[in-house]
Structures are given as structure tokens and as C-alpha cells.
Image (cartoon, rainbow, N blue to C red; front, side, top):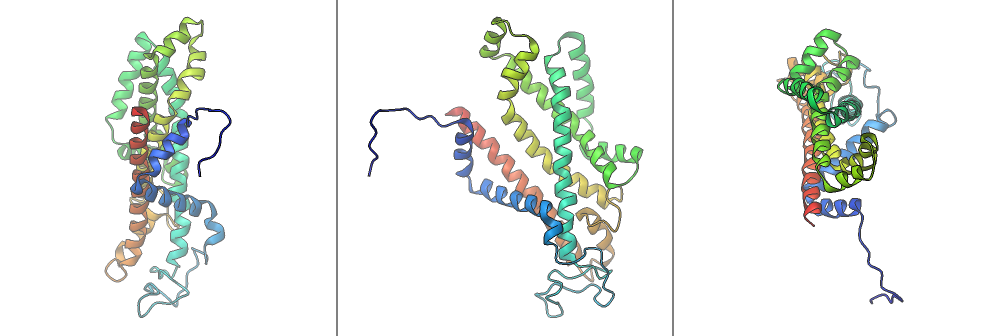
Length: 297
């Protein structure tokens, strides 16, 4: 039954509501969002949920298969590795390294990108030209190669890996923020605000940044999948997380020698990396489509 209204009031949904309305209509995007939420929750509360010590070595059960196989045990649902360590506990612990630290690296790169991108976008003349040429030069180098070079200078380790990935992703964020600011400076409402007497900093914080949050979210989402792959790749190459750290890429490298005897020790961390990257990419693609439809409407 239609509700009675004493007076008519037009209701317009806000930008977040419109964005969620278009995003929620995409089943693949919702699937990716569910995967990202599960991985994020797992990365936050993994220390509470892990059933066993991920570094405990049970010499009696080496390369034990998963529990659904004939020789498996319920005590080790996903089996053990060549040192008798519980794979399920190590995979859960690895979510905080591969996925959780990737989020921290992206947030750090986003903060640096906002700072330097704002300076590049608001500058003019010789300073802007010089900065743009240096930025174009940095963007020609793949992020993984740049991260490998930085880790080679700083030294291997998980902490240096995060710094390396932050610096490797920084040119992408600076480039994205600069382009977004340059596009906003051409809008009529920015020109009107400038004619009203506002200076550059007032325009940046009051007009431009509130209108580029969509591009920043989309850019961060796409960079997250790159950060996950870079952390896993550096761990696999022995430049990132060092053994016995339960990082997914490092776990694959440690189990390569026993891939024919115990293929699950390599397949399970690889599958989690695939799921993490796929979920993030589905969310990013869903956001891109939702933003496009919101602008069209």
C-alpha cells in the first residue's frame, strides 16, 4: 500500500548511494567484494583464528595430504609441508603478510601520491614540465622491476619489501592524482571559485580533492592487485619475506622441491594468490563500471 504524504518532497540519492546501487547490480563485483572482505577479515583476526602454531614442526607427519584424502588427518585439514608444519595455519597467517601488508603499501603510496601529485597538478611552467618528464621516465619501468632494484639496494626482508613496493607504486599514484587535478582545473565550477577570490590551496582542498575521490579509490583498487603480486613475487625470489615466514610467495618457493610428492603445498598458496588478485580486480572493474553509469545518469 502506498504511503500517505502530507506534502511532496523530492528525494535525491547521494553519490555513495548511487554508486552502491550501480555496483550492487553486478554479480561479479559482489563476488569480488565478498572475497576481499573475507581476506581482509582473515588478515585482521588471523592470530585469533589460526588453529595451530604455523611454525611448529611435527616430525611425525611430514608431507601429510589434506584431510579429504585417504591418508589425511582431521588435525591437519589442508595437510602439512616438508617440515611437518600445518598448511592451514600457515596460509591463514600468510594472509596478514601478502594481503594485509599490500593494503598498507597501497595506503602509503596513496598518501605520497596525494602530496606529490597535488604539487605536480597545481604547479605550472618549468617546474611542471620537469616533474612530468621525470614522472614519465619512472612510469616506463615496471613496478616489479623497480621493486627488485629497490630491495637490492635496501636488502632483503619483509620491511624493506613494503618500502620498495610503496616507492614502486608511487609514480602511478602521482601520475593519477596529477591527471585528476588537471582535469578538475578545467571545470567551470573551479574557474568560478577562482573568480570568487579563492587561492590555489583553497581550490585544492575545497573543490578539487572532494571531486577526485572516485578516481583515487579506483586507482588504489587497481594498485592493490599489483602490490599483492609484487609481495608474492619478491618472496618467491627470496628478496622479500625470508623463510620460515608464512608468506604465500615464500611458501611456494620453499615447497618447489616437493611439488611432485606433495603438489598441494604449492597449489594452495598459489590458489590464494589467484583468488586475492581476482577478487580485487573484480571489485576494481565493478567500481569503474558503476562510476561510469553514475556519471551518465
